[in-house]
Amino acid sequence: MTDNKQSSAEKELAKKNIRLAVILGLIAVGFYVGFVLFYF
Amino acid sequence: MSEAVLHDDHHDHKPTGIGRWLFSTNHKDIGTMYLVFALIMFFVGGAMSMVIRAELFQPGMQYVDPQFYNSMVTVHALVMIFGALMPAGVGLANWMIPMMIGAPDMALPRMNNMSFWILPFAFTLLLSTFFMQGGAPAGGWTMYPPLVLQLGDGLPYLVFAVHFLGVSSIMGAINIIATVFNMRAPGMTFMRLPLFVWTWIITAFLLIASMPVLAGAVTMLLTDKFFGTAFFDAAGGGDPVMFQHIFWFFGHPEVYILVLPAFGVISQIIPTFARKPLFGYTSMVYATASIAFLSFFVWAHHMFTVGMPLTGELFFMYATMSIAVPTGVKIFNWMATMWKGSMTFETPMLFAIGVLFMFSLGGFSGLMMGITPVDFQYHDTYFIVAHFHYVIVPGIIFGLMGGIYFWLPKWTGNMYDEKLGKLHFWSSTISVNILFFPMHFIGLAGMPRRIPDYSVQFADWNAIISLGGFAFGLSQLILVWVVIKCVRGGEKATDQVWEGAHGLEWTLPSPPPFHTFTTPPEVTDATAHS
Image 1 (cartoon, each protein chain N blue to C red):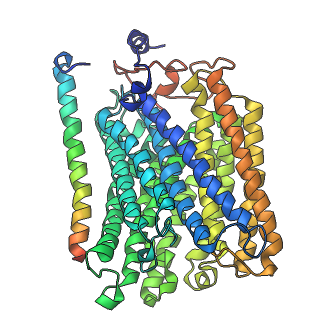
Image 2: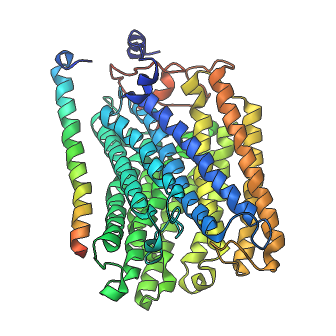
């Protein structure tokens, strides 16, 4: 489905998905960086 | 068939050629790629175990030198854990979760594609070390320093392979969480989710919490080797035992990352073939979450012999014992589901019952090792090898294989050959017990693990174990034959496939259209699993 055919509900859902993915990704990266820095 | 499904049939156009697979964003295609990749890696890792068992068939050095033997032991574990078991679980999740929750696809399809394609790249890095100066990793899959730092040119390749595998797993986990949290069909509340989906949500959180720890630990190995740090170097004020703590803080949850999806699979299979709803659904969800939570507090039971304070030993012993409680809840719930059910014993059910018996056996030997004073006798012996192989092979792998038989008719639209399926189950069950059960005896008698030669007193059992190993390896060719035969044709499967099957995935045609649930279905108590 092309972007211009996406309904506003689909766009909203895509935003929600990306927002959650970014939060979870930051948590994972935070664990990694925080962990290494902790031992430094 | 629902209106939504009929509507989907009009959109069943799929890409063709190699591009369909390279650039796929379809959860079914990506699920298939994960499963095929896992099967290939299962045979790669299996071939390494055949080398190990050939070498151990009799005492003395026969076919390989000790360095190569150690590489076989190390890479066998890495390939099986990260290349076969984890991708197989993710493959099942990709195929089934969207169909189970009434979603059209995974939440982040492009990231899904990337998660998969990182895997072949990571394993190319790992397996290329066989051709490097110093050979492939040979210090055990646990990568303990200082031994692992003696590895030649392969060390950075090992470290980066582990990083990539971690990135792939974390991206897969994020995708699963986003899919289940944001894309459930109307009416699919959390307590209506199929248990397979629940086990995967919990597994996904375990992955996000534990994989960065492993990545951090191997990064520190890399800086110790190349950038002059001394995290794990006693001469520089570091502590090699600290690596063990960090590794097992990842390593123990990893066991549950592997086992929980298999538990999810058999929680789908047993109610179907007992023709009864799952007993104690809510308690199963809480038991699964409890197992995951407790798995972060037991890591040091892998390292009782390093010399930790008595208080620490007691804490980790009791914490380990406590995991038996939620695990027992699950086992008894599965048994109660079967109790007075109208049971039939098709291949998936045989594999599920096999898991109940043989995973429990591996669990019991785990309890034995969790008792600190007796662990001093078992540590680094074949008793440990027997224990974790009972957990992994007839526990996890049998669960995943049960899932493959259970859902294969749905995926392909054809019934598999039941006679061959049963032959696969029985030949695997008999051979796996010949392979792993005697390891308890030789372990208790003192045979050390990870050694290519042994005292003649262990010769008879080792010959029997190797024969069991070769038979188990050959038995897996039956699975390949069953899958190929089923993909090529056979008796047509109905939409529901199994008489006792319930849930959204069974309302779809067999095989399901390329795009499903583009219009979300309405979920009611009647259509939900629970």
